[in-house]
Amino acid sequence: MDSEKKQAILFVDDEESILSVASEYFQRKGYQTLTARTGPEALKILANETVDCCFTDINMPDMNGLELAERIRTHDNTMPVIVMTGYPSLENAIQTIKNGVVDFLIKPVDLKQMELCVQRVMQQRKMLVENVLLKKEVEGKRRLRKVNQELLVKVKELNILNKIMKKFAAISSSTDVFKRAVDIALDISRADHTHIYVINEAVQQPVKVSSSSAESACGAVSSGGKTAYEDPQTPSTANPKPLRAALIMEVVSDQIPLLISENKKNNGLPAEISSAMIVPLQIRDKVFGVITAIVYQGSKRFAEKDLYYLSFLAQSAAQAIENLALYENIYENLFATLYAFVKAVEARDLYTRLHSSRVTGLSIVLGKQLGCSKEELDILNFAGHLHDIGKIGIRDDILLKPGRLTDDEFEKIKDHPVIGANILEQLGLWERERQIIRCHHERFDGSGYPDGIKQQDIPFLARILSVADVYDAMASDRAYRKKMEDSVIIKIINEGDGTQFDPEVVAAFNQAFKAGRITQYMKTGEI
Ligand SMILES: [Fe+2]
Image (cartoon, rainbow, N blue to C red; front, side):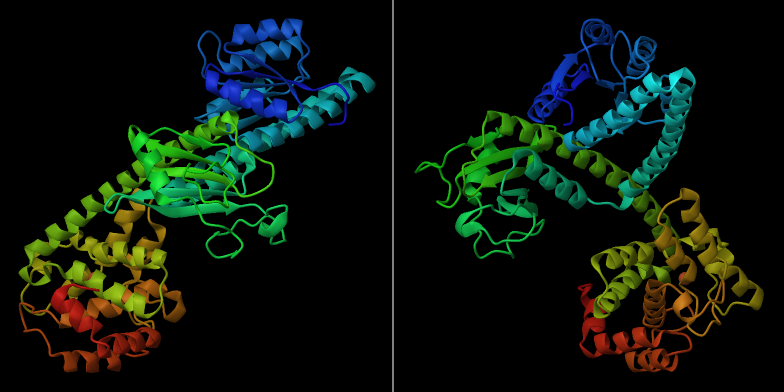
């Protein structure tokens, strides 16, 4: 810090825990801190003390954060006020500009983020104060306008981030939350290693899902290099044993954070670990995992305060995971509803019953053969089940017609990929899956429908689904014919190599068939 006098930060929040954690953290970083639980209390402090920067919550009784910001501005228009909110909205964002707020952070806010924010706004304030003092009112106002303009940009950015966040919630997994949590835990506790374990209920054992590690500064453990955020299982033979599973399970059943400051004999720690913390992760009353921090060597020992920080972090992480789970649930419900429609369509026709389910299974067999990622297999699973959902929009007399279709009727049937893609588009979801549904009747040589696109323009997963779809159609009885012999089907699929189908997928199909995986799936449903 460049001034000899400590910079003072005022924290205003009606949650005691936030005040004390933030206050502790910033004191350790060399700031003077002041706290207030309400707006009026904050104003009282401001009247009597010198404050350089203020963090305030938005939702508080008596006076909300935006009113407080407005009052501060009339009192001292150079003081940076940072608003922290759980629910950023455009209205709030616009209001904050009017009230002279210089920045705002989305809750749960991590301490590092707050610190960076303080450094930034202090710098801005310094410039602002210099401007006001040295270059008179006019110049100062110009600067203020500039700050406001910057804020407008920030608001825009925030809105975009907010949108992305909402979208991300659909695809991002709990894994991201875990990774973030172990990284922050490592930072705040200055541990050598932090881990998150999730409890496998069936076997009552912890399973490691994420970890973060810092370079050990000295001695035998030191392996050199920079801070490594990697899986500790792989890197170092020098890294000693992790915590014993039994110790973790004890914390899980007690539901109480455990602090072992000093490794004395019989406390359950391996000899290599000198200090450890284990904090349960729980949603409502249920413990689903733990976050752990360990120190191997050196003088660092965890204290009560470290345990307090780690518990606070565990709470935030669990909250984020719960939110994610709720979100995932909504998506699962929506998927279940859509698939129920597909089954209803299939049920009308004895011959297509379970067709979508089999096409999904076959696509996954082929996807695995082609080395698809887990994410791609998930997309295939989704798109496979719903690929014919557009048939819901086709009249029964055409859809269920036992004989061959007339040209006109066939044209109607050809609408189903577009109808299906439109259904998903209206929900504004599942972009990649939507493309696959739209393209599952495209042909590799461009003679398919609805768009007549070819080769690489057809999404790869749609090219896989197309082979699975045709295989199942031929391998099942139809109203107008019996199912075909495998040898005939294979011949037909290979005749389509490069015209109807992607050669790469046909090759994978041939391999999977030779290995018996297709027949096994059709007979047993096993992939
Ligand atoms: Fe189809």
